Length: 239
Image 1 (cartoon, helix red, strand yellow):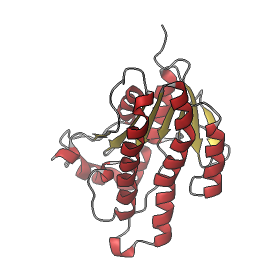
Image 2 (tube, helix red, strand yellow):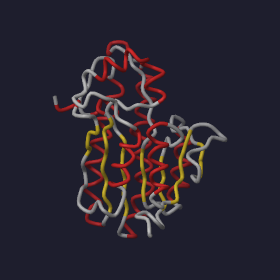
Image 3 (cartoon, one colour):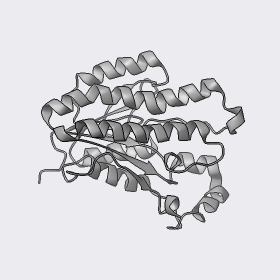
Image 4 (cartoon, one colour):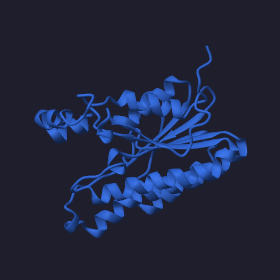
């Protein structure tokens, strides 16, 4: 049986844990060759994936990776790497704000610029930008993060408008509350139950559920969805 992504090269940023690792593992299972990035030298993604260390908060490291990426001939780019810092709006540190925009907005921009010319030349390509429900709605303390994730949605729409005619589809996903090690370590069981009570589906999402939809958006079965950011949140942003 020929797998749907056989012969495709997929790049997943922030692919060493959580949602990013689940996405990388699913793309591998679907037959793609996968390169993941992480910030630590000597890190690794799921078994079978190649690894490249780059901290996108460092403009030089970002530009170095973008230059290499431009020559790889990637078929699929998943911009998953992101950072956050919760601060009251009046207390947002400009340096923190700039760093969050650098990683969450500038990095996806530069990496899309690196891969889109090659995708357009081939007549096929897929980009999936991993946003957040806080780029659909917002809440107190999320000023820097929401600014970045709303901006990422705008980049998604603008890029899609330019490249869809060439067979390149650019979309986004906006995960809600997902059951990752980070979620559990930060919130604890009581915090998780408080969140679950706000979700119509009455549970956390799973990383593999995000990965399955990203893989579909990135694959051949998606032939006409472009420029969309789709919430995967158990209904949270619709109530």
